[in-house]
Amino acid sequence: MDPVLLIDFGSTYTKVTAVDIDEPRLLGTANSYTTVRSDIMNGLADALKKLESVTGRLDFSARYACSSAAGGLRMLASGLVPELTAEAAKTASLGAGAKVLKTYSFKLTEDDADEIRRIDPDIFLLVGGTDGGNSDCITHNARVLSEIGGNFPVILAGNRNAARECERILEGREVHISENVMPRFGTLNIEPTQKQIREVFLNRIVLAKGLTKASELIEGIMMPTPSAVMDAMKLLAEGTPNQRGLGDLVAVDVGGATTDVYSVAEGLPDDPRTSLRGLPEPYVKRTVEGDIGMRYSIRGIIEAAGLERVADTAGLKPERLSEIVDMFAENTDLLPFDDETARADEALASWAVRVAVTRHAGRLEEIFGLGGLKLVQTGKNLVNVDKFVVTGGSLIHTEHTGRIASYGFFDEADPGSLKPRACDVLVDRSYIIAAMGLLSAYRPDAALTILKKELMHVPV
Image (cartoon, rainbow, N blue to C red; front, side):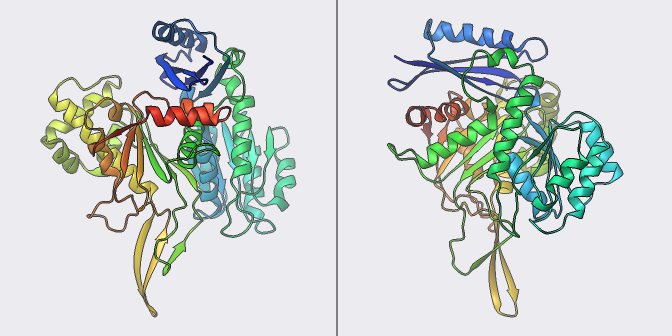
């Protein structure tokens, strides 16, 4: 046996997973409240004690960790045009596992400066202009940031011709220069910026979140938890040189505050007559719906889906559903305790999945012009994806996982949405996806084997 410990310092829970990479197999999991306000090591010690009661005493050959403690990696970004460089900045940030609080377009205003000062992000991503193109916007925004104060670092990933001038403007602040996220019109180059964001996370944010003591116990690079999940989904889809993956997939994580959606697929049009509009979509894509969650953002589900529709799904009167939503919102650690609250919880999770996947997927429009009918695709085509991975408490702790997940499939009432038409549903009941993403950086074959063993197929 060759046991390895995988740790996820979450905002609410610290989760530990023990695996045997020799066989390979899952040995056990456990969790405890994250004690980020006192000493984060206390929560880790509690979780390890619970794990030992399951697995027995283990001599770990390696320890790896990821973290979203204290709210995760809070980022702001600014770009030039909303649909182009600002969107590219957002895509790069989300793909690095960050929580993007806001994206600004064009020149920052005094009100924007006041808001940035009030938010005080962990990192600010400053982009704008193609290489050799507009430099006025990014240099103006650098001047605004230089006068804001605060201690947040700035990553420059815009017009390379303006990078050094922006660095001089920002003298006195921690600045990292990366390659332009959009060096040419319509061309994305987000991987160097994603790498830079993760390095800043490791070198700075880990210290700020009180994880320095924990870093003495682990090997390798600590990364944001969503980044680990992305790595796991990419591994599961693509496989390794020694094992086949499952192919294109969509994954949904319905949490208490946000709903994250991941897709691993090219997402190109099926019909050669279809033209693409907007920026090219990344092969591995993550979106975060910050207004949709099962407790902290529960009212956002009602606002997005409509009280009547969610109540109809739950088989409850709207007034009763509204009472239950208020109760969950005010008691965020409350679990369903009777038939009505269970039905409400399931309906809310179903609509969280539908809204989040609809926002993540692309759309197909029919446009009539001088040349007749034209098909235009915006975003990612997920129609032919046939694997749907789900995680999150509301989908794990229920007998109706498949039914909830099916709300992320194609809907006849919304024919323009490019959501998957039909999928095999796999559920992460052991909460190991992030752990396997961590492990994949070191032992990808072991991580893939365990994923295939532990992800359970459920009927729709």
